[in-house]
Image (cartoon, rainbow, N blue to C red; front, side, top):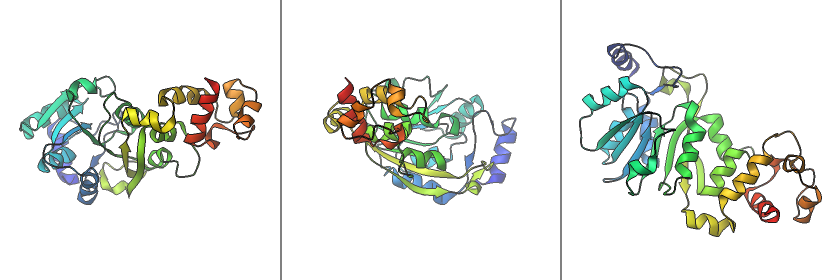
Length: 268
């Protein structure tokens, strides 16, 4: 859909984009194709999509053969999708994706997570996808560029988000940067397509030698006050860090995922 078509559709539905829900509709067809290509969508794939809106991405996923479970909070679009995309390949779920039980919606089937995510739910949605009991085969999401870069620790500094992604995945990368003009209405910031390939729950524990959830429990304490020294945040003697080869004056962002795993093993 182009901006004129989106304006017309929104007017028909009785309003504009909902800023509270972070609605920005993708109008760049090249970006749309890159998202679906990165997810390697094929016939029979089961996809969960959050915030389908007017169904631009939804329609392309279905065209490629996917069965889509679309979770939409705005009731205008729930009605719109159910009347314009009438197909057995689409299940529209009305509600807040943060509160829905995704595992129940999946019914035990393999799945992929592909979405143009509302900025306000980005971190929560990625965490929910990666840390569900049955992780997806792949995650491909269109999100704020700054958040995407933080998720892959582009600046070399670990964040709570990049640690969460690293502990749960075999790889992550930015597929492409996306200009503001690729959306209507345009957001105030650039976006990016982020691809994550999750590991199975079993493989995660094998790789890190400890349940990643335990590492995250320690890391949440470590990142509680990012400007403080790690030892101070954790309430431990700095010599504990020295004992495993870490800088006693390190901050949380200085530790790699491997070092976070080593520190957690030392503390438990």
